[in-house]
Length: 88
Image (cartoon, rainbow, N blue to C red):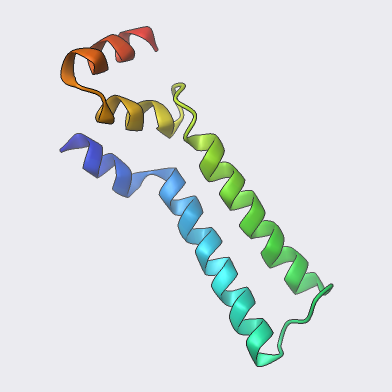
């Protein structure tokens, strides 16, 4: 299935994974006492989480060449998907 393959390679998925990794590193750093509030590390990792989540949301807008167009086309039925692809 093309839609399933697309989800695996999706930039949106990569952004979400990066956000999760940054949150995990931040949480572990707080627990171990390596990162404290208002440090450069905390601000950098927190900023990376915000940016990656924002990019994932933006990337799901159903306008080509963003991922949202192909995801929406994969979720639509056959004839509707063809009409949607022609429209975009």
